[in-house]
Length: 56
Ligand SMILES: [Zn+2]
Image (cartoon, rainbow, N blue to C red; front, side):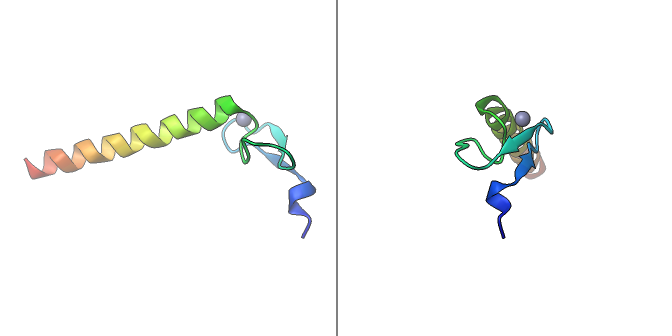
């Protein structure tokens, strides 16, 4: 499989990106990587708040 040589679509913005030599893969840029991380963290935070609310 030569998937690494193929162009990939950034899962966040859908822009074409390459995996080869891309430190932010599977994202196209640092911005998309950070935005995704932020989304993920805020989702985690929301889940934690929900769980806390359940206990109380
Ligand atoms: Zn992107």
